[in-house]
Image 1 (cartoon, rainbow, N blue to C red):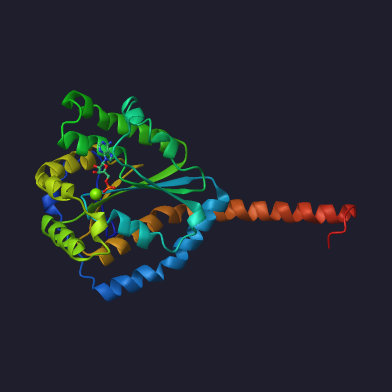
Image 2: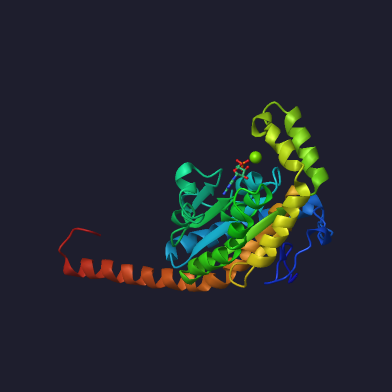
Length: 284
Ligand code: AMP
Ligand code: MG
């Protein structure tokens, strides 16, 4: 497990992950107000980085969000992505597969949702459900889901080789925090619609889910498509950790995107100057 200097924990390739070793309430000593200020201080850089990514259109960015019910996938999208231009961002929520999905291989519905160059694609749940809920509920035989880890690594390698920058976040909450969030939502009439009895039924399989997550994180964290464990009991810590991890990943590309755009700007200015020299139009 490599900690580098980021708040999210990057899972080293081919490791045995023990989620119990990671405290979901960890804040690395940060206080709420301090963390919120630090997140806001990153907003301008995030907005500018996204604009450069979009303009240069050399890479695409795929952000995968996974976590137990109430772990904060929706909240992350709402809060972390707030500073960027919605035009540059596609969000895809993966629900139960349709009959057409089930009549194909498990990646069939996923590949068309991969972000185009210049775009940030966010997967709210993803192809990982096919080794998580599917494994926990025996929706396909073990022999079938076991092969999927390799298929996922191959698929993500294909995307990476086509200039996709992949970041995968596991929002790590505690079982107690989930209980508190479910009860809180139930009390609040405006939030209760997000709940279902299924949430309490799934909760009974908590430990089996943790084992399935440990396998997915351990087998599918690669150098090019790393998994990050994000302590997510504190929403403000989660938002800061994810914001900073995204920025740290994109920062090395920024100067190349600036160069692409500077060259394009120079070429366009020259073309306009040339047009003007021809004096064939009345442009100023
Ligand atoms: P939610 O994210 O609360 O809207 O719920 C979406 C539901 O779809 C969750 O219960 C997921 O477990 C389920 N789901 C997503 N992908 C799959 C899949 N490949 N197979 C079975 N269930 C899935
Ligand atoms: Mg749900």
